[in-house]
Amino acid sequence: MLSTGASISSDALADVRERAYATLLGSALGDALGATVEFCTPSEIRAQYGVLRKIVGGGWLRLKPGDVTDDTEMSLCIARSLATVGWSPADIAGRFAAWFKSWPVDVGNTCRRGIARYINHGTLAGPFNEGDAGNGAAMRVAPVALATLADGRLLERWAVEQGHITHNHPLSDAACVLIGRLIHMGCTQQPLACLQREVQCVVAQFPSFRFTPFRGLSTAYVVDTMQTVLHHFLSTHSFEECLVATVNQGGDADTTGAIAGAIAGAYYGPTQLPRHWIAKLAPALVREIQALSEHLVERSPFGRGQPVVI
Ligand code: MN
Ligand code: MN
Image (tube, protein in one colour):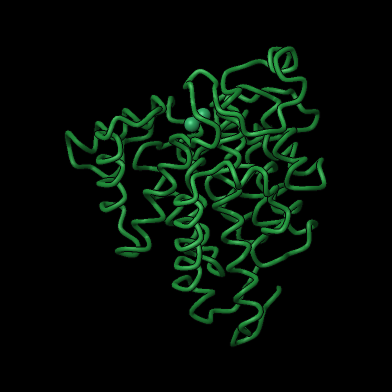
């Protein structure tokens, strides 16, 4: 059991704040990088780019370099909601609905169905659905991880509640919680062995997440998504290497990129985020991510002085 002690130093708080910033920014970078090759196969990517290492836009959504997609936009809905009203699934669902009505560049099918259900019936969760094991809840969980820093129980509750607005499936729930826990561990600088142990525990509980030997599938099925993210995060040694390897796998590359970017951002911290990638993002987006991440950390259990218990 690890603990920072009863009160946190301002240095420790500053470091966690920076890593929280790297979490959200890392996720947006992964989305912007991967969107170029979303739904491509690895060989199609090789033929067109060799190895995709730059944020160049394009792709099936015809993006400008640095444009982000639903992964980042839905994460921002949650982050803004948390920063404005604290924890309120109703407020989050309302923001999803407003976003959905604003003609976003892309909306996943399960998210679309869940948001339509909320608009038509006002419910904050649908019943269990075999088809809800997509990655759309997992891709947007990072802000919840930041808002619950130092409290794993709270993370579990909120990660699942935000997920159920659109996805009600145990594999989606497990992915949301695992991503959140890895972000908690990265932000509080736990050693890699801790993160590996966490992953192994979840794989033991949900054997479909097993990623060795790696099958190379990176579809929007949350199992494939998690295998891709976990394989590349645990077999690379820098933020950039992790994201490049992840998105060059193709498939749902903006979403695997967004999730890998959040985990690797937390783990490696902001100094590892490639500057030439950040320069492609809209400056207003980078500023908002900075403000939101600071806000979420300060209001989190960690920011209010709760010791870190892993
Ligand atoms: Mn997307
Ligand atoms: Mn996607």
